[in-house]
Image (cartoon, rainbow, N blue to C red):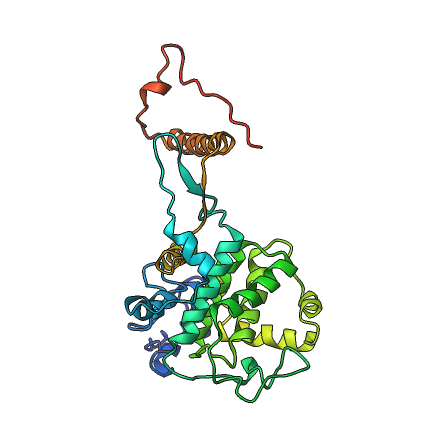
Length: 336
């Protein structure tokens, strides 16, 4: 049977090679098959449609909308007490250093919430259109039994009113300052993805949905939807669930926030605060805090040094770390 010259041998005809047609050839332009779909965090936006909530280089929307008011000298209303405080500016000297207690990793809660409320204020005030969706309309889905007035969509809320609403939710749910920054990121992502505008008629429900989602993504012990019904006593769990579901669908379930985007929003909020005389309060650097900052700096320095040694890269050393004995001697830092 193995002899090719045998009469019993049968050789099958050679297959005819055909051109392989890809499935993508039959798909409409711009679409790909389900097997080649990229992860949502890897999809690149179209040219001219850059999303600042995903791109660390693109400018934030609230900063763009606040520039016109700041350049014209039209900022938020301030009380006489706030005006009097701003006349006295604290400056560092050789004997005293003034620092605020807000950092990118541990922002100050009260001031961060104020800045986020100010960003929302400029979003509403300087909106360019009136695009709306029913799920966020407060008349169709009221947050209280009293409902809303007939002119509920005519007048822009003041910064104080927005801050009071956001502060109530954060205090009752015991949310962190980082959650406030993530809330603003999700809010701007929603405005872009859903092609929506935040206005007097929908700002409360948009902010509520962003806070609800940010608290679940960021905080380890997330607040349940039923807990928000205890804060806003007239809203139902079904309404909260539907708000969360549609919010996620409009975001295309993209809840990823890169660290670079988070840092960009933090520093832009600080810039917005300074432009509106809403500076973070500065306090003299105490001995205890100086020791804590030094300890944190030393821990980070040790971590970087360990990575450098692990990678086999030579690192410079200051004179303070040079020891005539065997190696570098470091003191142990204790964090309280």
